[in-house]
Amino acid sequence: TQGVSSAASDVYKRQDLDSGACSDPIARDLDARFGDMDPFDGHLWAPDERAKDSVLAVDCRSGDVQKVKLPLGEKVARVRFARDGAALFATAANNRLLCCDRDGAVRWSRDIGEYGEVRAGNIYFNEDGTYLCLPLSETPRSNWGEDLVIDARTVSYTHLTLPTILLV
Image 1: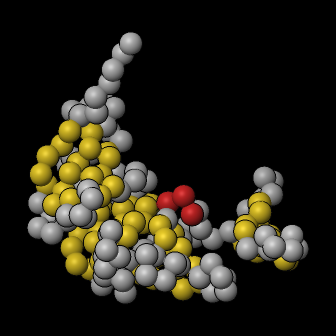
Image 2: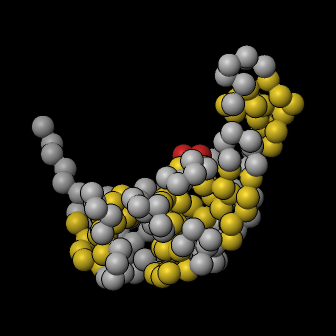
């Protein structure tokens, strides 16, 4: 199935891609752009746009939705699974970065505010998943932002890097 939206409303219809049939309208509760696919079971995990501290885990085959609570103190802005799928990382508008297990139990949490604004930036990992890169949209040193590199095992900040701009 696939969601089809109407530009005039926040209501979606479920469309079966094989038959082309559409369901009755369903409410839009999430924005998949800020979520991630669970590497273990293929569920889509995305921020719950209607409530703070929660993520929706959607079974894309059945349409079943499970709400998972994450103690961020704000609406969740971005969700990303670790490369091995064992941990879930989330950011919020209050500049918190959270690492938790698959059930939402906190492994660690850090305030990134002293380094800059997190917003809904992506979370990137190196090839073996030991480091994550968090692009900060704005920092005290640069209005262009910087990339914060964090050791995912020790939670230590390794460094901030300024983006390179090439003017031709």
